[in-house]
Image (tube, rainbow, N blue to C red; front, top):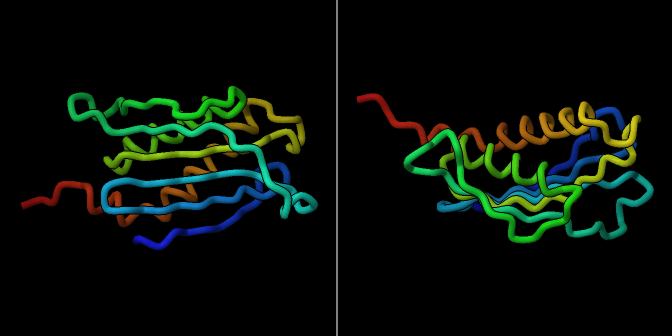
Length: 141
């Protein structure tokens, strides 16, 4: 799965805004970029957002380690949570860049809207990472 996967899907509670996802899976790491754009700004560049590196902890597999490489406060928590979740599920190092903006959602980006967006990004990303997750599980003998 060396070729990047690029796709988009509607932002929950904001059908005129899409989440754009760019996923690259290498043998030793995963690279994910996510951003949002409404239909009228689809061709315009978006701000960088946060960039976080996370890797599984061999001694405590349920708590991956992470470090922020580039921080933009409104996107940092979302990016860190996403990177840690993917590192824990795939058992691979993960780089996540995120510039999702929830300003166009119905209530302007409440906690509930952020959680819905997070769940949707995780659901879509994990569906494409299922072969990686399956190969990282130990095989019964």
